[in-house]
Image (tube, rainbow, N blue to C red; front, side, top):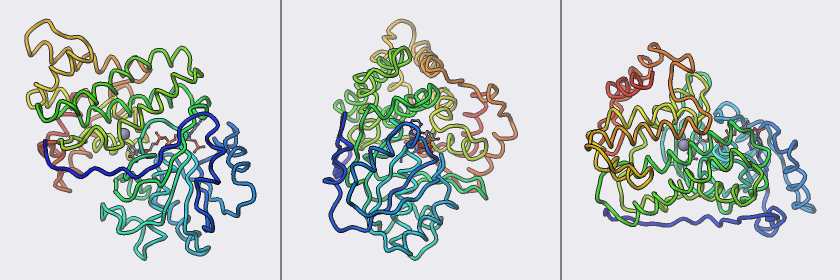
Length: 380
Ligand code: NZQ
Ligand code: ZN
């Protein structure tokens, strides 16, 4: 196990009716701006709940942060925030609204252009922010990451900064998600664990077991959610699984991969593929191309998650990859580029972009543009 410092400062406020606590969770005497997406919160009643909870407080609202939040939109929010001396933000929405809000928080605290903040990778300073999270998927409610898109250049990059001061997670808010959103959210959470688990063997038993616990939970609840997406206890487990998949708890002292995410971001930037869906397409390819490097972990994963014990090592590793793709498909997602009309041209473009930026992703920093080409070709 490598040395590490662990500190996750987000206060997680979980459960039915917790949105009513908003006002007591927010500090007094702040110049507050609420941030929203495109309007799902007005349709499912969340906006009214938030308004009710904030009765008696003054605040501004910024609407229109799109899925895969765009820097072009966020620049406007930063401008509005600066003009109104905003010093606290509350994101009400999914990962995109919260990620966008993380950049707004950095932009308000900085003189630099918002895209430069993203490209600097770590934000120097941010005003404080919190969230009411409406999509179980990204873990953004309890981590310091944000992923931002730039429409004019079709780019998508992540940056890091502070964690939300608090996040309210009410599983009832998920009842309005579409089947596709749920499928993408489950795929995202599952893949987050794989990015942190399917790496160097023998680093930490406790991290392995913890990661496997999340994988098994997501795998177990997924088919049940399909049948009963308004079951409170199921959605509560789904929501908490997504948070635990990417809130630093399962990555203490271990190496991490994230190549699949980097490649998936390109598919989203170039084709608008929903984030979780992009991972369902790329992850089986990453596993296949890096099978030798990941073999020991693949065998452990295959045995502990899918009960694969028979056959040669090669057969067992292949079976684990096959079962992973089958799991994504069982969610209702396609897992092949060709099924999404994405072909060689895109593969070449991504390989070229990665080579140009001298990319070397993955736990062993060996996923270059050329390896990425191989991965994507195996996803066709
Ligand atoms: O914009 P509105 O109208 O609110 O609609 C949204 C959006 O269209 C809708 N929605 C949100 N909550 C809903 C709802 N519809 C019905 N009922 C609800 N309760 O869902 C659509 C998608 O929302 P979005 O926020 O984009 O989804 P998600 O939470 O999956 O976020 C995806 C973004 O997060 C990034 C992704 O790259 C992508 O940009 N990620 C962020 C990470 C992080 N911060 O750590 C890590 C992840 O790997 C990921 O990269
Ligand atoms: Zn993700």
